[in-house]
Image (tube, rainbow, N blue to C red; front, side, top):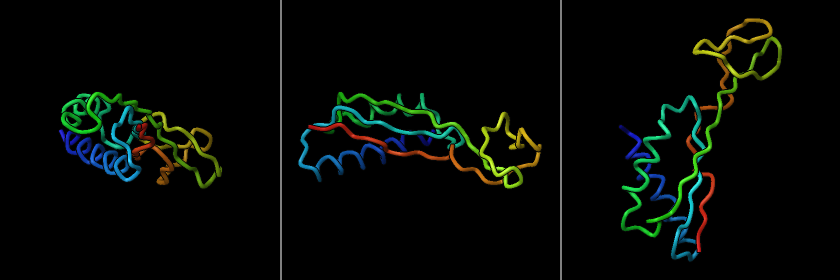
Amino acid sequence: MHEVSLMEQTVDMAVACAIAQGAEKIHAIKLRIGDLSGVIPEAMQFAFSVVTAGTIAEGATLAIESVPARCYCPTCQQEFEPQDVIYACPHCNQLSTEIRQGKELELAAVEVS
């Protein structure tokens, strides 16, 4: 369950960002988690309340945006959303090795006061 470690790092970044801005409290944090990131959003949500305890983020809300996988087909020169673990273009059936989104884990926003 690496999500606890990932959430610790995320909260540390959010707290550092808030303190750098002169904030005293974090009210909300928004994350973007790609479907191919290997991160379980529910586990991140569970870890959030644990790792924020005793920090300026304690009591904050966590919003998680799921980012779907998007691949690129060089033959068709189009992006597509893969339908399974084989990234075949739905137009020409060529396999794609270029994943354009879906692997990210991003701290998208921090609401502070």
